[in-house]
Image 1 (cartoon, rainbow, N blue to C red):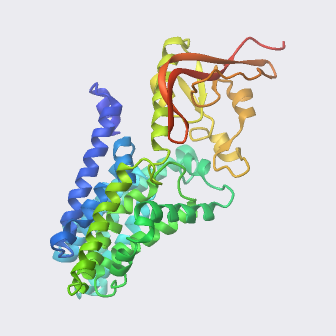
Image 2 (image 1 turned 60 degrees about the vertical axis):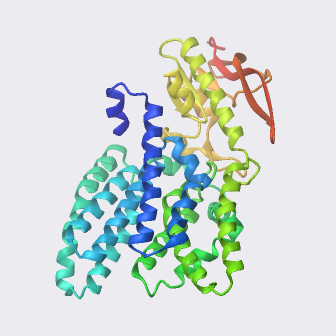
Image 3 (image 1 turned 135 degrees about the vertical axis):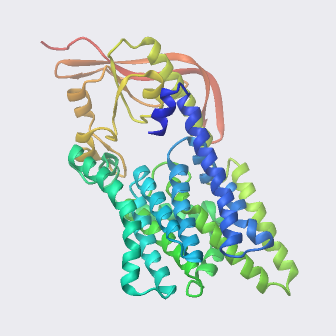
Length: 443
């Protein structure tokens, strides 16, 4: 909806999306400091720990720049959390209402926003109990926050259910049900610890803070959010995109707990100044090194991906100039080429296709559904993109399906740079490889 308004105003959509996403990231960094100081009374270096670690986290940085919904969603959830904290401190019902509004908009942005609202409404009820409000009055006080969330979201959900006939978005069906899904989810969480928590070293600090959850309801609340989110990631199998995108919504809470743990550990190390400063140096040096070193686990392969994105943009622009009006496109990585070509496009992985998302099959060890015969025989696109662009001409046999013939073509679309081996880049002619629908093979 935001992009539609900007499009109507004539704004460049990619630039606008990135500006919004980066702005949301900056606000999250500021909010993390605000929460650390105001709600957890952190001081000195500890008060900056969360903001520092968030700002240098590879996943946070990369997905801020992506222009996707990740950071906007994360900011909405964090706004809801801050409103709940303010209600905890003041008891003012206006903050409970604002909390529900933030989670409602978050749930329109990503479906798991409902999960955060459900956790928060339970803690809202618990906060009322700590304020010695009677059971009946607590229930009455829950009515407005629940209605603020449930009425607009319920109308949207019912419309979506009636219109599409399913409870979840099409992408849910296209991206779940693969082999060893939960094991893949566990490995996804392990990679986050390895890449973003200094191989597990920094994990000691949030765990140390979470250990004191009985003493502080706000720590308890953040701990529950993180644990439920991790359980959700394990169940759905994580995400295939780089640098653990699905951890970004809880990065702020993990690093706020890290700051709390740091302050308590520094306090315990008062008599050991050398250990204290060694801890601070490691915490400062590690995230800087990870973000700046392309050989580190999170950054490995990222430049290769970005170079391919540049080549795919070239392919999309080439299609815009060479495809005929009304011709269609089938492609796997279905963002860049459809956007720059302006062509009606089919996602070969089923993200915008009902049949593939429900009836497509997973290959051995794969986590993307596909049905190539359905794409060629039923959708019959004019262009069937075979692979990412390459630096060498590709040769493959033509395909004949029923009355349709697909001729393989590999065309030079410009000059560019691609990574041919890990850490090795070459510059040269970029070849766009695809099957082109030709004349009928049989009558």
